[in-house]
Length: 211
Ligand code: SF4
Image (cartoon, rainbow, N blue to C red; front, side, top):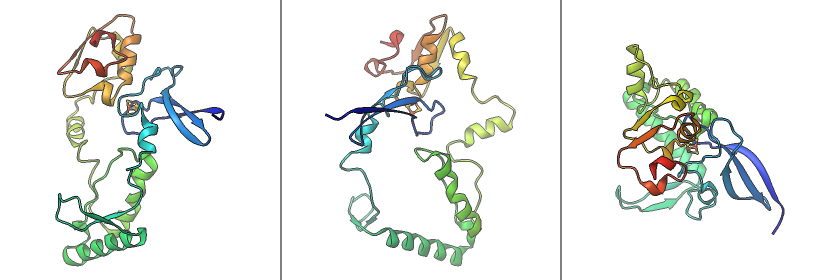
């Protein structure tokens, strides 16, 4: 076994927490990631999606090259194609749409996911040059944008969660997707009760009151 290097970083996924982590690297390969306990906001937490991130990174079935569908939709029949062919097919399709319907018939829909800010915005230049439609924000954020446009507040200051006496989580699963709010919650001077709809107790390793 070689020396293990500890490399500080942060989760690349698109939730507001940006949990701080420490990657354990052995012989140039990440063998595990753990939450960085000393981080003042995320306090050692990684959610269920990310606490085994090294397994996803090195998964043998991870998609690493373009595939073209060769069967009916849903048949899961694909063949491997080159990057040149993949880009060429997309460019041809774009060109046909522009010729037949005009450039605004191209409507880019993208947001963050695991892209990060740089990749997220990289395609904008291409679509601007093409003259494509320019959607405002993402499809999934529009409900929030509409509320904000009417003057309603968008959420609350996450650091105020320590003052909560009751936390009602509706339609969300913080331990799976946005976990550091739980760390803040348990750092609070007063222990709030969490009311999770349909929570799974075994998915709350950090949340004593939810077990
Ligand atoms: S809660 Fe999960 S997805 Fe969000 S930043 Fe933290 S580890 Fe990443």
